[in-house]
Image (tube, rainbow over all chains, first blue to last red; front, side, top):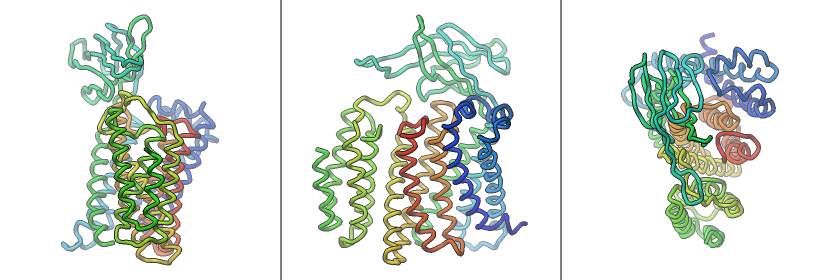
Length: 238
Length: 233
């Protein structure tokens, strides 16, 4: 059993299986929008519980891909463990370390997805100037003012909304939201998605708490560092 | 001006390094477009196909600088011309950058993506060379192209994730385009691992390196045309 999990053949076949499953998924997703359209709306686990598990004919590939990713994760960790246990020499230290850094980065990225899929929250709504909305953890968001600029053709070139966050009724964070400019408070992100004019300017907001995000960033950095090091070493060798 | 490129690029048929004037003009056109619209010229099919042709040309020139005209040129040049033709017939985007795209993360994401696509293209050409001549050096060049392409593609995906998180609060969405991007990433990961497995290495892996570019092409153009996604190209 241990040999199965540490085998490169397991890696290769699992990757091939995942490629095929994602291919099937990309074909089924647009065909069954009624099942998949809500996949990105909230927590993935909620979608799995309420939608995916009731529509297995359309979502079986998703569950099979999860199983494949689980197998790949175990395979990755066992391979790295095996490599770490072997005797290392100073001569090939970096060459043997860098794949393990890549594997660790990959593991953190998957861990991030797991955390983001099961915990946290994602809320969307529209608020006009001066309006407020309650949030989990005894917080609230208030929109102070909204502004937009347009070019000569009437296209929006920029927009922003000044907001503040209340916690237990006390103002704890003030900031301006804009495109690619969220505001963060205690792991919660506040986003301005777009603006509309419904007699008065209205901000379309999203509030998102993703406990996996920081792990995805750490994983991404590790993956980059490991792969750049490996590239430099392998490039010479090849 | 774009049409002059169709005359200049084929000069590489005389000698590979004669592609330099075509690349110099192409670089000038890209920079001019960037200055004209105040953004990186990588929005829509016109821009991206043109940039892909240019990136393949640059990698070709670096790789073939000391080569004589050979099958490598005969295979790469048509690829450049096809992408260039696709760029010329596609309508250009003539407006500035939408606010959500005005970030360095987007620019790096797109530039690195297309440079990696170009490396995948060159890797596929080297694969064909390796199969045609049973050439070990071509196989090694295919590996180096695809390894570099894979690393840049991975970095492009990480930067794309950072951008998406800052713009929309999520670094990943379950859409067909994202699935196909993951397919590309997994497939080249498969290529890199399969090289190390007895029974997979050799022509089988070389073919994988060639087939990978077909997946890249579908991910780039096919998914955008056939499937709705957050990506428009």
